[in-house]
Image (tube, rainbow, N blue to C red; front, side, top):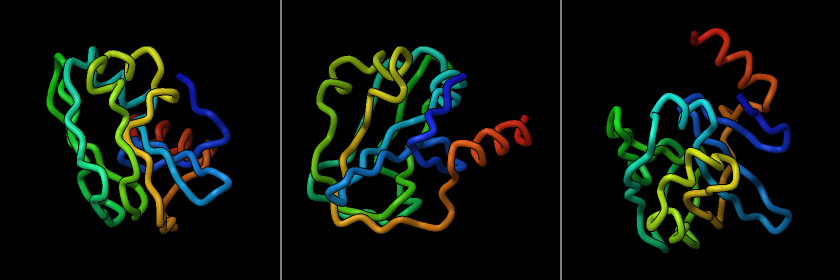
Length: 126
């Protein structure tokens, strides 16, 4: 299982990629997509919506279940990955390339984990 070192992680299995200009991209981890199985449908929030850390920003439907997606940080939705809405299976093939939403006006929360801490969390969770 892949856990890129340049991302931050939430215990709800979302990742955060911070940009130099104060934006962030949110996606789900390799662990999450593996647990879900084949992703069939993604429902995401609308642009310009504001969220607090821990809020539901959408859901993912797979062959196994429908699962809520949480934002690990606060912010305003700048864009939604339209490509994923048309091709949700990209989550399975590229979990770290297939971002869900882009946020601006972000507030990082202290509960995020670096790659090493996330790997340890996964080991303890099993």
